[in-house]
Length: 86
Image (tube, rainbow, N blue to C red; front, top):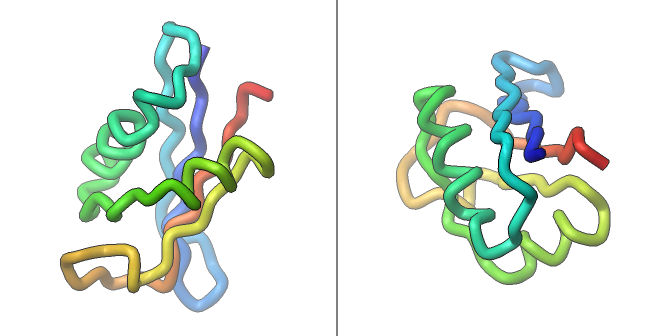
């Protein structure tokens, strides 16, 4: 099962949050699809995902996307994603 907690943070406060859930087994090749689905539910831009983001998520069960990770302008300081299923 996939359970990922999305937190939109501005001024060190959680402004919005969403828990993405999917019944399939977590597959790293689907990581960008999980992120896109969570960002769509929050009505936020999807960040550019690089190998380092996936490695941090695998190693630390969380990853933080800062404003520089987005092509579009975003109105928050960072987007933090945590794996709740581990």
